[in-house]
Image 1 (cartoon, one colour):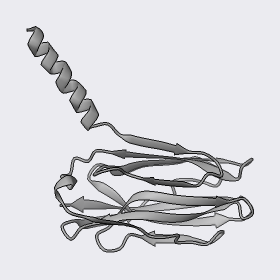
Image 2 (cartoon, rainbow, N blue to C red; image 1 turned 30 degrees about the vertical axis):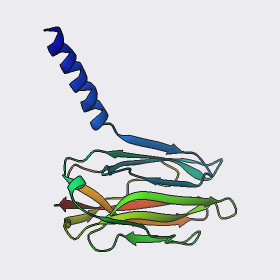
Image 3 (cartoon, rainbow, N blue to C red; image 1 turned 135 degrees about the vertical axis):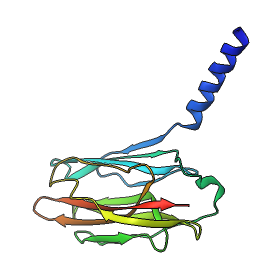
Image 4 (cartoon, rainbow, N blue to C red; image 1 turned 120 degrees about the vertical axis):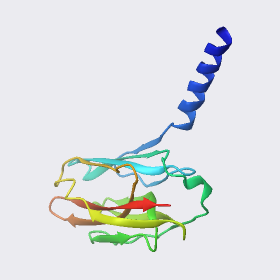
Length: 178
């Protein structure tokens, strides 16, 4: 009986390791480059604005996927910065790509950020049923987005307001088929 209990404890510990998530938080005015490690999927984005810093704290989370991504060869690349300061962001990963990472640099003169995205794709992936979120944040308010199971983040649209020194965002999600 003691051996069985020990095996159960070991199995539960291993399960916890295998299903652990990756989470990182970046503070105001900070450069960051975040990407999901291995075959985890970007599943959560949260951001809170500060009028004092005129910037946002960013939190990203990646979780293990129920999809069998580990067996499929893929290509991943950084987009390079897709906007200038104070300019809109209109970005979508090419082909069957989806966003697995985000890079950003803040400038205190412009009180804005430039954005770059880490996209992963494979000829074996198929994206369907794409849609944009309704506006997930208001000026100077919290942004919070959770990616639904079976879906991936594929695109971002964002606009900056010089008076408010903030951005609002819309996110494009697609269903991922393997």
